Image (cartoon, rainbow over all chains, first blue to last red; front, side, top):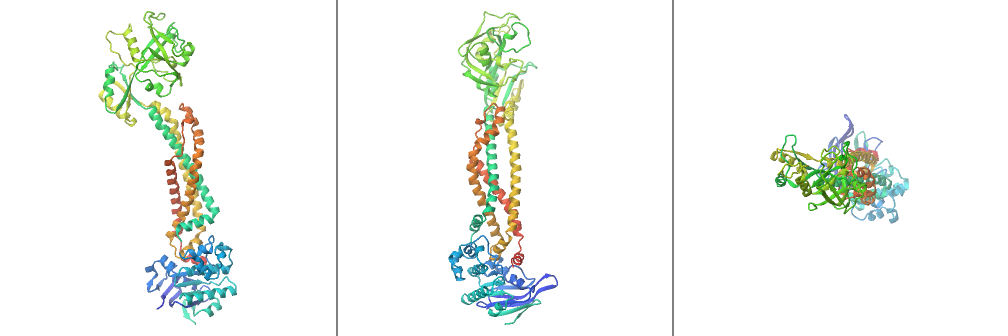
Amino acid sequence: MPIMTVRDVCYEYIKGKPVLKNVDLDLEQGLVYCIFGPSGCGKTTLLSLMGGLDVPTSGEILFGGKTIKEIGDSEYRRHCVSFVFQNYNLIDYMTPEENVRLTTKENPLKYLTQVGLKRTEARRNVMKLSGGQQQRVAIARALASGAPVILADEPTGNLDEDTADEIIELLKQNARELNRCVVIVSHSNAVAEASDIVLELSHGLLNRVK
Amino acid sequence: MSNIKRALIYIGRQRVRSLILFGIFLVTLLLALLGFSVLNASARVGEELRRSVPGYVSVLRDTKNKGPSVTEKTMNEIRVQSGVAEVNANSSQRLVFPELVLLDDTTDTAPLAKQMTTLYSSTDMEKQVWFMDATFTLARGRMLEESDSGNCMISDVVSFNSGLTLGDTVTGYFRNSAETYDETRPFTWTIVGIYRVQDETANMTNEDYAEVPANTLFITHADIQKIDEADPDAKPGQEFSYRKGLQVYPVEQAQLEEVCRDLKEKFPDYLIETEDGAFEQLSGPFRMMQRLLKVLMTVMLVIFSVILILVTALWVKNRVHEMGIYLSVGYGKKDIILQLLTEMLVIALIAVLIAWPVSAAVSGGIGQSLFRAVAQQSGRTAADFNVQVSAAAVFATIGVAVGITMLATMISALQVLALQPKKILSMMS
């Protein structure tokens, strides 16, 4: 049974000019999905709809058989999905530990060491870490939330090739070991190759290519 | 992570912003605490004045309509009226004092005119109008009591000019004509108190009263009665009357008008009026100061509120990215607003905790310099005004701080409520 279902979703910024046309998608746990497509094709829009940050013009998104409205926006974003952003989006005056603690009551070091951060790095100001380390903190925060679906918007966009590979491997590993569903929006072929299912968004239509 | 913990982390890490906010709060609270303290001290002085210089209802003989005299009977009837706390009766006489060097108070060129002065009696000398409004103050000796027959109080100027001091005697006589007085009937008093005239211009227009206040001699009713009885001009069998009327004090000052109205109804043959001029005159500077302080504090609070609101609103605008992160990880707008409120309240609380002892330390000096001018006008010293930071002032200030904080947060919250998660996501991407 899919953990999340995107059913017949349409979205338009300007009336009569849909960005998404009757998109249908079933997401299952333990798999990594990659959505790729040209700039401005609506990848981030689809991700924001799946993340409950916006509402579709028509259609619905179900999580565990319930709509986002039924679950509640904050509740949905806190317990059902978690985001990993291209520019990490960490609270700049906090330490990695504190950033991770935003989503969990558990010891954040557990998640930070899991993504390869040292204890000393976990207690520094987050802005003193490298880009790769910051992205690891963002992933740790997403993992710590315990949400079954991780939505990653260009998570490797700002990283060098080696670090990007490490991040993708980390997300993949989590999908496998923790039975998470990871949805990655990316332009990267490496990401597409590493994903279990690859979907192409073009002219508002979503097609499975792998 | 709880709202309080997030707020504390923000305050601890964003020190420059927190310090600026703290500075705004500290200045506001210091001024508010000082303002409240001075206002309280001023109000306290007002209450003290109200107690020490109470208003009263004056009951006088209606000479114009040849009304009845104010007698012992009148006093006893009025004393038992509802709302009346006490009654002070006053009388006067005039005699020639040949050995006294009086201040020149008359244009009368008759030989004895400059030796005549007024003798004044009062049931309770402490409540005598001029002593009560501090026109006269006791300089040496003691106040005259009802049992002090044969004793008197004299002014320091006249006693000095006449070479007299406490324990000496003064003698007065009836005036027979412009040049002679009746030496066969002397009235002698021993000086037991010497008073000082604080206001030389007081009661200059009172007909029965010595034109120069310092020429007045205070004696007892019993002695006035003796003079009346010996007066060659007095009608035989005439009852002793209180020529200067009665001062009627109400139980509650707020009842002054009501007591006056009741007495007018029950004693229509007398001239009955309220007398609150002394209090009005003495409390005037304080009331003016209180009004000024209230205006200043209101203006100050409005200015600081506007500054705080603008600063907070600007900083909230700069924190949209942070708020977007909170929204994306599942915090609600309510959590964000509560965090803002907590940050402000924690900083305000720290400012209160510092402003309290600081204002307590400086309030005395500031209060004294503020009160110096008005103190002089009321015949007091600035030291009489004990400006203290009371618990009430602290609570009032905390109330003000919480009010301003809530207002600033609510206005900033409008920006938070307007946040669109999608827009933030776009911005963050």
